[in-house]
Image 1: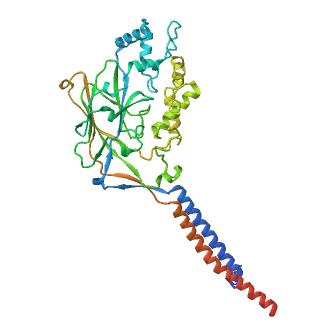
Image 2: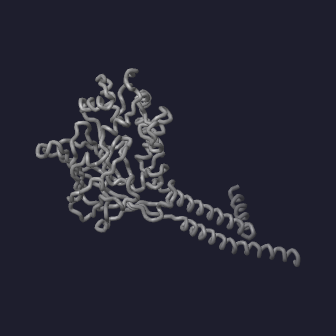
Length: 425
């Protein structure tokens, strides 16, 4: 039985080889299958692996960008001063509970929501404009907050050259080195060389009884937002030391689809004048959640109309929904917010606090320092362009059709010989 099977198989192979038509059809089929497989691999590689991130160590030639520094106003304990301001604003005295509620609401942000709904009392001006009170209460010019600024040991004569005022979702803030104010990173004022010995920004802040300061240290495209790390500006002189690693993009990366590079450039924002960043994306989502549920927002990047701001009448909705937690969970469970393509990697390496009695009590001193110059820079490159894909497809297709043409001629020649034999014998 086994011997008979072997003989049958050998007979099949002999007849298949002797029948050149079937042989060449089989060869062309295998060749076509291989070609299609290679083309699929080329297409898959182009769609999933067209960019790569490498490392550069040529640090002696680099001009590095200082992180964006945000100084935001936050609640203090100046209740009596605020009460006096309220008396002047409304021309009447209000109960302790109402005045305290307004004071807290003036500093409201997504991280500082009322723990319980404010008590409604029809005898109070419940629908007053809290934004007007903010404008009266808080400074909008950097000279009211900054006494002196030193960058790389040199005095900055005009604070507005460095710090620009902005209303953010964290309240009133002064931002330095932020893409909100510049068309490109190269235009920013706070830049340093890897050869510079002094890589610090030293701030002398004016103390105020009405408010305190919180500091944000972000990548230049980022804004202070509800999930940011914050650093305290205390009465004791404090130095914060950071290490910063930058990522640069080669020409052509921005032309690659977002799905391939897995990041977005600041220019790819859905809101004009509001550069894309991970923080901006989360702020937009939080605002959309608030608008959909409460019909108002604490900060709406898409529409700055003051009528959309959440007043006291919306406090119960803000408390009930817990938008900050919802947004964190939503973004964490999806890829709706991609990282920025130019995002700096910033890490805190140390904090030094001095004795505050050595300085004027009305001055708060904070220094932001780059601990060591960057020796590594990440570079995103294009490894597979559309031209590379076209050349690869052309090469494979040319090889297939070239070989197949020879096989096709062999088949035609075989059938012509068969036809001649049948006709002429």
